[in-house]
Length: 245
Image (cartoon, rainbow, N blue to C red; front, top):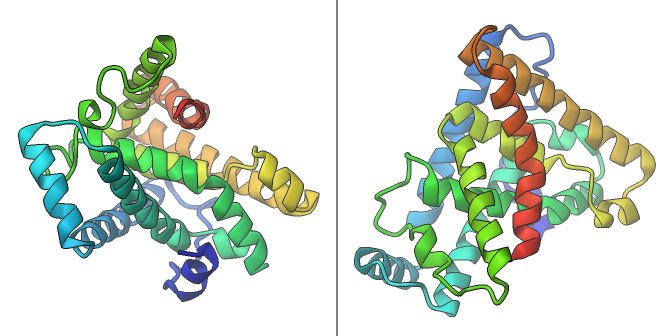
């Protein structure tokens, strides 16, 4: 599926400017984005190939490692959902007016969003126990990587990233920070400095929203600074995990 088809055909969420919103309004907006994304995930998975879902369900019930072909099918299903989610987020059209620039941004960062969405599906409480969702051990059984240290590092990164899926708001914020990440060679080569600057501004805006959200959830005296740090660090951790494989 071409990214440009998704961007042009999918219904967009109305752009929102949340800079001046109160913490309560910001939280409500984030929860609305979560609900929209959760509904899309559910509908996309259950409307996919019955054969693929049947095989995934069979392997999940028996806790057997996925074959390479079934692993690829699961990855493609998550990637397809990631494309649909990316096309619906606020700020995309207002950040980059050119459809070509929007396609470039989504193409460059969809591997990051897909990797994070895989963690969400496998490790978050909202999806654990779903018949067609495999476990981490099924996706990455012992010995899946030739380099043992990289295999161990992948597992560590996964666990740290999964920590951000416990809260629905953090989950949404990490996805948005990944989508609006300007730090890729592809974007450096294909986007103008002005366009990359706009992407960076939107990412910084969502980072500020993360700070406001976490302060509201965890309190000034609580661990909100740690949670903000984990949300921001998720960008680098997801990127590293994608590079490992």
